[in-house]
Length: 90
Image 1 (tube, helix red, strand yellow):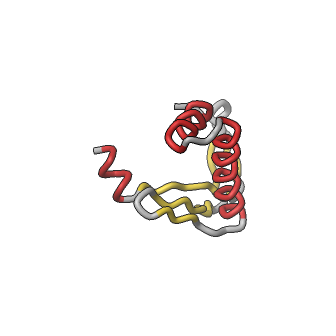
Image 2: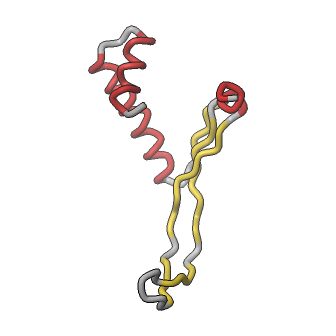
């Protein structure tokens, strides 16, 4: 399922027009993104938790040349599925 398929599914299940459903889906994505960029986590009970994992700087190797290189510290988005989602999939 891609984003357009998700919008169509939301429109069909909620009775909204596709434009309204697109706005709702975009609003959810924007709210999650904004919360994560502020360092907060988003907990959706029964679905899962979005959080930010902080990765330390490290040294690695360039795969082409084998030379050591430094990898900058970064923040990575992370998702942990909740019990309801796990049960629905299994």
